[in-house]
Image (tube, rainbow, N blue to C red):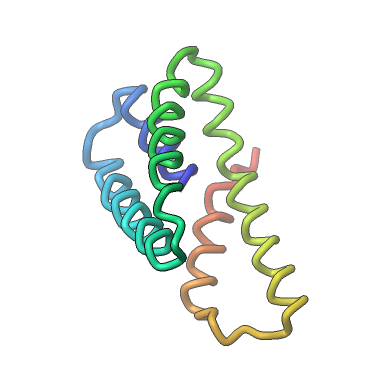
Length: 119
């Protein structure tokens, strides 16, 4: 969710055309709904307000200075890659991939890898 928020804010900050980032608000809405369901069914609905305030504050802090949004954008690839490694580590330790769709995980890993720039 953090990466999607940063990508959306980056696109808006630099004035990219709406067509280039229209998918991000939809993905963010899906993630927020999923997060709310997880919090609701795990009995932690009180944390929803904390997350909402954190994301809302982060949304505005990203554009306080130009270097903050640029740094956050560069760190998103690292964060995405690290999350994939954490998922692989968890799968390796549990030796159970029953909850993982190979197609979905492969598409996510490919998306993360495609954002790496080779210079």
